[in-house]
Image (cartoon, rainbow, N blue to C red; front, side, top):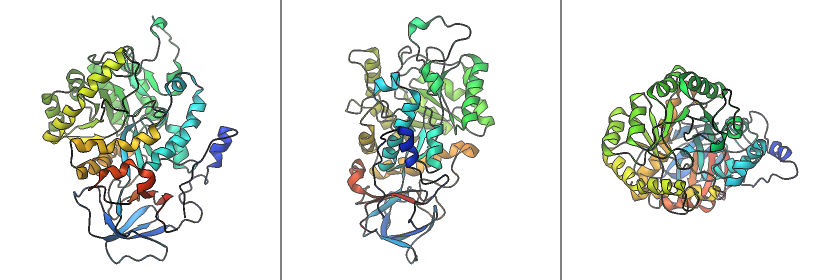
Length: 452
């Protein structure tokens, strides 16, 4: 059965959106069996540096029922013919609600149109082989619910909700002529839509963190330093006081989860570490003493391959934002090289923003890491390692079960690849031709195995 179809939103977007429905809570598309045997596949299990010898993997319902020769199935059998079976990829830092939006649409268009517009984007995300996503800021609660209930196709989502920022921080979206703020400041359009929330002082920070948890955030994101795409905070700025960061961390801990922080510099990140933060996002300007401290504390470094290439974050030529990106990109090789040498826990993410070609370019990010890591370690980073990071959400994790591994009892998020991605990781750069099967939660969403 081939499910690799392209939905197009036409003639009334919401009606088309609902037309994708398979039914609330549906787990298996009509006609698809609940038991599938992958026979004679080589397995990358998410951990081992080598593929297995040819073996069999049995999926029953939404779990892997067994791995090994001799399994039988009365339902569907997929002949692997020596192809590779591996866990679905995990993007640990993405923005599903604006990763592929043109800048002008994001800045000016109707919020509910932007929500509907992201439906095909979520499917593109899945069709690149990414079956899970830790969303690092944006109004993904509704999109996640629509995916989980079977109305649309997309990855599992661990939502953060709105990025929480101080005034003149990375989440600030007001023009400067809106200052000074009135005592009862109205929300900006991006705050109303849930992309960002500005909060100053412990009471406001607590309120905004609790609002994200109220809506179903699996972790919370705050900004502790300057950013590339924001206009009023240079990279060297340290944001939020210790009291404010501790308030956010304590609130998240009370809910059984954690805080992830946006920041680049040693001063900002060391302050966050002092306050109990366990996931550092970006960090491209960190020095070796700070990286050693991250390693010693067992904290995650969730960084991205920002380079001076076709995937550079869009900025205006000659602008301060362009200069900030150039400084960050200059630190990319050093941060990966040092993190690898020191043995840090490094998560893989893309952080693609406002790139209309994101559905194509996302597949090119993971292979970039072989400049600094062996291919098997790169694959492990985007599967088993990222799954361990997702597990930090504890009771707030929206999905129960083991991810990122091919083992008995794990959730059946699987990719069948035409070739050996350890020998040639660039196979993942062409998911259209090289991903024969994409399975999430035991459901096949793409089938080009040639065996219907």
